[in-house]
Image 1 (cartoon, one colour):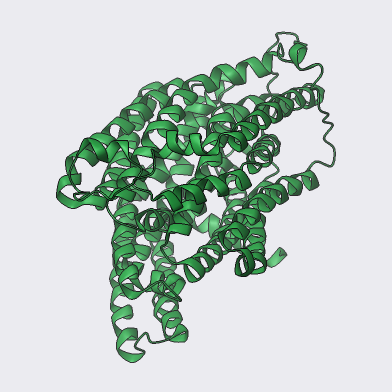
Image 2 (image 1 turned 180 degrees about the horizontal axis):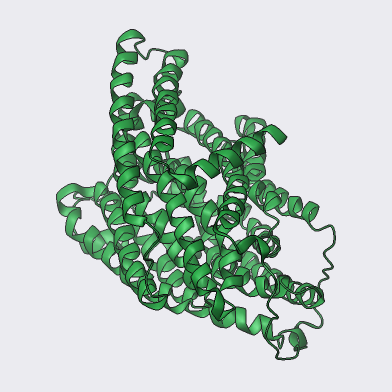
Length: 564
């Protein structure tokens, strides 16, 4: 049933009338999301440590990564790409109205549609698991390739997996497939809560997800192997969905499966679909071409490379989740409401500028600190059981190359959110297609020379390209970001972070001399002492340089921790 075609009434946004209020609100929301991200990443690291201790960089871990990557990729295609590009911007309009009945009707229709689509995909994954893996990764290799660094036709036709690894991947995929339904329903409810500016329960969902996986791994993996981790993945997906119901105290939703054909005519649902179409094209290429391409290159250039790539990506995502993702989610509902009114254009630029400045003050020192301590950090987290010192060295190189791109990626997330807030998903999609093409071309150019590491370098270059193009296009649309002090902020932060990095490096050398890393206690000291000193030193420099967004963030974080 369609609603009357009337524009959403403007709502008073008292907290967005002043720059100070916007900064405070942004810092508060970012703090909640950042704390949730820290909890999630900490538990995620615990999960990865368990995997590395129990299975090492082995065939079982590679098979598990394939089994969770396929439903996760389908989730990206079916629903997750909707969240920031379409769901939050559209739902924010309805959430701005005093009467929330249309919001409940729209979300009811959306979640019913998502459950129907994801349920059909789960059935297909269960019935045709080997065929899906063959399509996604290629047929199992009967004999190993003799020259994995060469660009031979066999490189792109074969998955590089043995028949045993292929069979295990299919078995695990049948176990993890149902997680798609839980993740999809969670994404819709989380998008609704973001639109209502209720950040807490979505923020801590991933932490609960990883906690359940850790508990299931400890309980089941010693008995049934990697299958226990796969079971934990499904239970974790169900748990994070259940958590969202705690934030729906006044929400009125119902499944409308029987009346879904009529509900598909809802104007809001059609707008979500139209906004998502450009994003879908980018995701299709990313999921069906780019990711299989990356995994194929990784598997062909050495056993365990998929595990290295996955674990290094998880470490990189810690500062990205803490900064880029948290700020982009916190800022999107405000930008979406400001974009509704022409007289809010100046406020829109101000909000976006504040978000970028906050991202710069957090992501650059995080990247530099992690770059300096990459080896000690990986040694502390992973160098146990079957994970060796050579594994630590190899993975540290991978992580450092990934870290080169995260400052660009963090700023890029905010620029993409600005496009989405203006109900424009086509421009980011076109820029995304261009940057993905650059990634593939650059990887192929570097592959014969540096092999597996070409993936990391190309990935960092991709983020730089995407951010640069997006910045130019968005600047033309909103008459630039002049007056936001972005360049001066970047220079101040870079200088302070560079000094911090020198201090961290020097302290790490001193700690190694005093406490050679022979056990867990020494490894902990090697990471903790330089990190704590670096954070304190950066706090001091940020105060001296008057980095206001950083100061507001620290105040909001302190208040949140005191309340906790």
